[in-house]
Picture 1 (cartoon, rainbow, N blue to C red):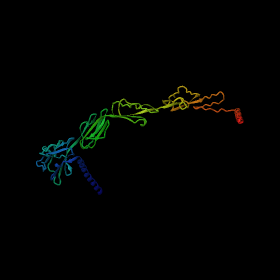
Picture 2: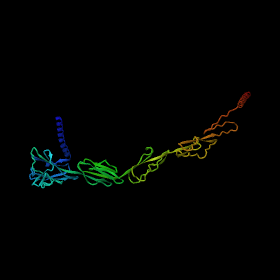
Picture 3: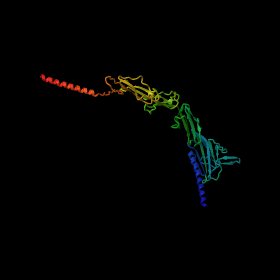
Picture 4: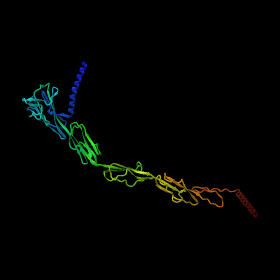
Length: 425
């Protein structure tokens, strides 16, 4: 039980120590002490603070001897003024004695009047402090303070920072006028560009930031505001880019890019219609707008085309290749006009057989039959394509015999002629 009691007491002590330290830390971040007004006397201390960098505090009045702060008669009167960008928000005060904050303590004098520890002026200590720029610390009757048990007065001049918004031509910012904010608080400002405008850039305290660029709307937020700030917003006319692409990943032509185009300006045209072998240009996707209304990419669209070729079958000696181009799948196959002719040959048709419709690139070659005509001999006729070919005619045994007889006769005649020549010699 004793152990538990000790633990509770120690915990309470820790809490008691922690709370004042927290308060001091918060005040230390916000306030700075004006050391020239710090007064340490035998049984009294006076400390004057103000929001850091926010203004000035001056001593405007005091009891007759500045080096004293006598019981019931001593007073110090101070005046606060805000620097540019700040707003004075009044004085707060503390009066510490024996570990307690007595606040704006009072005492009754002359049986009916009330004297305050903190009043608007030193000459009028019978009025409670009302929030003005001036405040007076007034010493009341003794509470038993000594050199070992002193009374401590603390006063704080409070200021709030101002946010100054500026929107130049082309848009607006809200709030649009100087805005006082509580010290340490946050503030969001909404930025909206006019039609066909956008945010060019934003400056915070004369320093350009990247936030919000090229946007129509943007919200900027100041957080934990501990000093004045200025926000400036600059606007510009929206400009856009129009890009033309070939539809073949740049293999036909590089992207044609037109930049810095304002809203409502005529859309730049591509120029000469693009072309590609084996394809028909069918337009741009999406359809080209008459005017610029944003960044736009137009891509060329194509339709695959095919070729039908007619060849003479003899290397072009009869007629040059007849070529029909720019044909689509499903189109009727173009016909060869007329019927080709060739001396001593009959035209048999086309190889392969001509299709009714186009299904791709196609070559059709003329086929021919040679016309063999010999009335003295019987011969078999064979059909050929392009180059003529003669069949060997079969001979009979009778013909062979006649050839041998002729050869014998000629040989005999030659022998007789030789013998007659020898006799004459």
